[in-house]
Length: 103
Image (cartoon, rainbow, N blue to C red; front, side, top):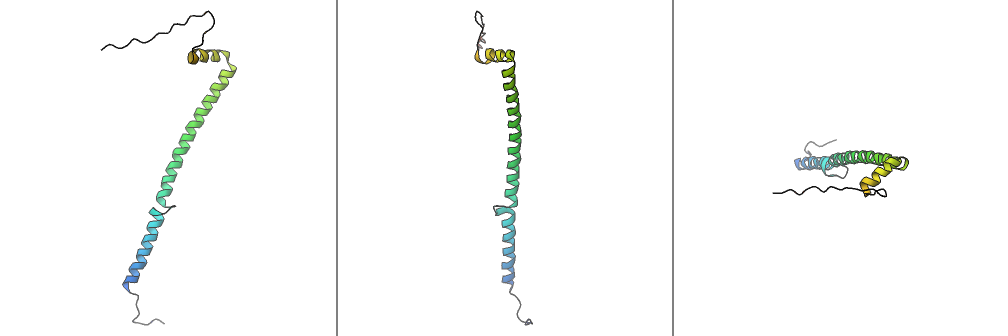
């Protein structure tokens, strides 16, 4: 049985509430697996997934271009002329340099 004069002091209740508040704060904001860190990591994952999707699209287009250059001789010739400046024998090439702007 509990004695009538033995109530828990208020300071103990305040310490108890302070501990609960600290634990709640730790779980929601400060901890390693807190809601804040989870939200930040989720945003980072979404950004990385978007970047991976973009890089996969670039990779697919480069694979198609590579296949086209390997199978189509006209495409290979066009790429050689435009990117590397190659010419056929006895062929003349004219290169036009843009005029400088005058003030």
